[in-house]
Length: 68
Figure (tube, rainbow, N blue to C red):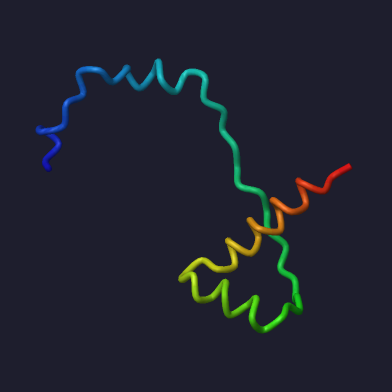
C-alpha cells in the first residue's frame, strides 16, 4: 500500500492530536545478576527475542499487584 492509497480523511490534524501529549522518557534500567530456576529461564528464552524485557514486565506486574 502506498501513502497515496491511505485514507486520511478522518484523521485529526497532527497538531490537535498531539496538543495534549506528554513527553515521557523511558525508565532507566539497573543491571543486576539474578539467579532463577533453569526451567523458568528456558521458558522466557523460548518466547523469543526480548525475553529480558518480558521478565522485567512480569516482575513489574507482580510487584504492582503486591504493593501495600
